[in-house]
Length: 132
Length: 191
Image (cartoon, rainbow over all chains, first blue to last red; front, side, top):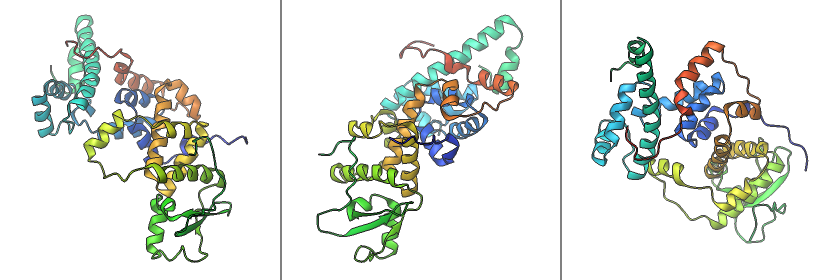
């Protein structure tokens, strides 16, 4: 078999890269932002237009509100009506809740640790644009 | 029954019906069944623009961006799916999203794409050029499945991507995405 020249990632166009990222779990999409500035830019763009509108946000208050809404089917429908998420089925709700659990746990742990160790909690809340 | 591993090189189709001739980047000419050819939206569009008068004469559609070795592989895929796929109604956006989470790559396609990643990327580019959405999507999903198993460093190495962040930028992004390193909690746990 002939040796093929390695096709570089840079050879792929933006649309294709976007379509590849679409197939990644959201957790992995976030992690892949660390690869390079180009990946960071594309993924931030993608995540900001994510189908989960509320959960694509870096605003902790929006995250918490959306997460709380998603805890019940009724809340999910409310979230959908309010445009926080277009996902309304049980199957996809579970996927989102799993995802939201991870991020909220981390954010809340970080916040608690900050409160304990220093007075930086105010800064964290301000930078996330929210108050829990 | 063809297998994914086979790569038939004979493009002479015995069945009657409209035949479409296409040529690859190297100028090699292939004669395709109309049904197979029209799985490419680009070819379908050209034929519609030409009023489908192409098949009856010696006109050849030039596919200047597709190398012969890649086109042969794509042809294997097209012929298999032309014979096996059912007509599907377009899915609603939400169904598409669910499918993205839940649908596995069919076994035949997994075998078909069980090749060097450079070849997958070339098939992907050719499928994009020919506008064969299903094949392009399968390639994207296959690459995504490979990415899922890699660390950031491994991804950089695999694709020859330079880490072009400044130390400050890298630290900032690391902080922003630190939560990704946490183990996901079990579903139903309290928070």
